[in-house]
Length: 311
Ligand code: RUB
Image (cartoon, rainbow, N blue to C red; front, side, top):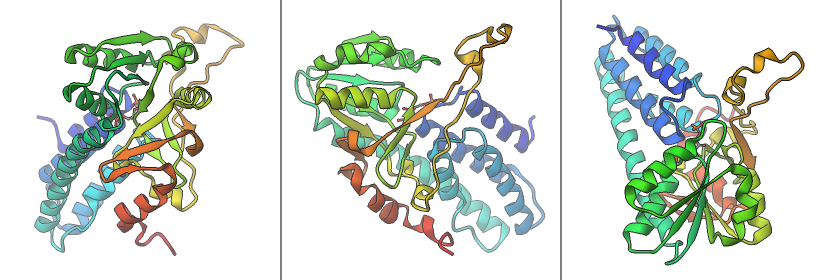
């Protein structure tokens, strides 16, 4: 039998190594892991409970630096803890269940809202593997719309292969293209639909590397660019002026055997920033909003987040 800490470290390692990946899944996995941890530890008092849970939260937080879903999920799980050990344990577990349930509902709701913008006969381009973008595509397809999807490979980790597998399973006609083919095909595309790792206070999008080039190509071609993002992917930190850290991943993901070269290094940023000017709409569970309204989402939906932050 593994100790509660060993179980938590297992989840942290799965997130770091990307066995668990995608901002929504990361957030839910962290919430579930914290709940299991809190229910399994045997602290002698509330102070010890808080210290142990705080340490566990920090371990999870440090797995992937970019995704704000991780930080927001952890904060939602950790908030409003009780005044004694057992009520603190209980409220943490309830918060975790609540987060998971709300985040699953949000995916469904965004599917409904976003799919209204997809017309019969549309060609949709998607990048990487976003469960929320896929929810929009599936909802449009289930409503009887005749759609076709163009999916990018999404080098270096080929998350596009996960996307085409899912689309194939649903019976949706799909074409796989290399990332550099986007500008060649963009004139056949009616809308780009991508997910989000972070939405900043000014409405910019942080998502899988390559997203911003797609947005640029879409902008030039006057193709609509839609982002699917639950409200917990909006970053309160950016309202306080912080910049979103971009995760740099291992060189071997790009070129296995790179260490044999003496004068060559690999740079492997996992995400990039798409300026809000290139985004037509962000579909959230509270509505389809222009990126300029992101500030309000952070204030209204994550408002509690600011407590204690403004000195
Ligand atoms: C995944 C990625 C996805 C977002 C949104 O990056 O960029 O587009 O996380 O996904 P990685 P979802 O594979 O490096 O985790 O909509 O499922 O939250």
